[in-house]
Amino acid sequence: MQKRALAIHDVSCEGRCSLTVALPVLAACGIHTAALPTALLSTHTGVFTGYSCLDLTEEMHRILGHWSSLPLKFDGLYSGFLGSFEQIRLVGDVLHTYHQEGGLTLVDPVMADHGQLYATYTREMAGGMGELCKLADVIVPNVTEACILLNKPYVEHPSEKDVRILLEALAAKFNCGQVFITGVHRGNELGAAGFCAADGSCTFAGAPRLPHVFYGTGDVFASALFAAMLHGKTTGEAAKIAVNFTHQAMLYTVENGLPLHYGVAFEQALPGLMKELELL
Ligand code: PXL
Image (cartoon, rainbow, N blue to C red; front, side, top):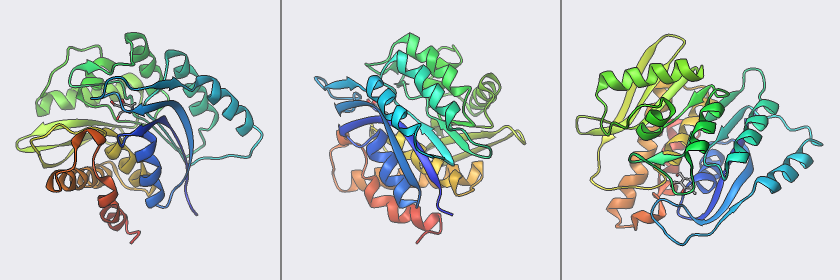
């Protein structure tokens, strides 16, 4: 039976991230995905200045009002970048309303990177993100977000032991079955560390680190991870598949001299992802 998912993210019109990544990745993985846009921006906020940003909270109420008259059911719920503090409670209500027995809720607490909150985020919103994480089966913070969620000072390159401490603390604080921390360095590799609360196991999936700063890679990783998990992959398998996909997208971008501001060329890596999920 085809899986059904709901993706709750902004639309950044240019600069591959959030919905413009999640929808094509999930579609390639055979998943029928509804979109609930949280904000409409001309670009992502990571590197551009002067971007437009429209908070869609009011429109979300109208969309959800209509949806309440439809028999919608989702196997997976996936939230990311949010438009305002008020919206966080609404997204919490959506996760609650559409949660179903055996379903998968992945919250990516998008709010910061490289030790700093994104331009449109406030400390208050960061606190609200923690509340959303409590509704998730799986959370996918980067190192900065993990530190913020735990009220710990930012550590740029946590050791293997520190990463394990962060993973376990996040799983305990937010009662999540699986936690992944992205942007973890190990030797010459960059990747994601995963923790499965059911058996207490930790995993690391990495790929050779490329000497560049990329944008939107968190969304590329989380979208592939969510798809792999909806296809029944374990913590370790899903992390590996998502890291490989993200690495291939970064590699294509660099090898072809594409501008880095506009996200990574995940389009080129979709066939590889489909093969790993045995869909090709
Ligand atoms: O990739 C995360 C993200 C999503 N949406 C918007 C962003 C960012 C990161 O900067 O600015 C609008």
